Image (tube, rainbow, N blue to C red):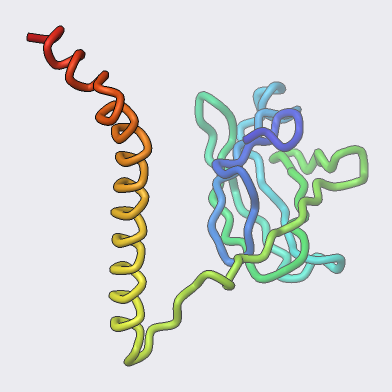
Length: 155
């Protein structure tokens, strides 16, 4: 996913407590720099400030970053000559989405029973839907006799 020109992530959205691979094909890659570092932190105050050397590949400089539980992911780039690509002094800042925990099932001693009941209920609802569909589709054909005509035509 391209979030900004020349910056790509291997995911559609950035979520807290996950790992993301970032690819950079910006100014330093185009200028044939040998070394590029990503300088990053989290939140408004750039907490957990870290700098990591990115790996040079044919498609750009790449690094894997562990995202933490924060509101934003802030970063900029530096080459080996201490030149900065910081989005014209605005830095690159992206919001981090929280992981939805509403649908997570917490296991306990009754979980297997409730899961089994849920599955049986789901299977029965599917069977009922199929039966109703077949009745609605084929009952009028049987009553009108169209079903028999098609069978004879097929023979």
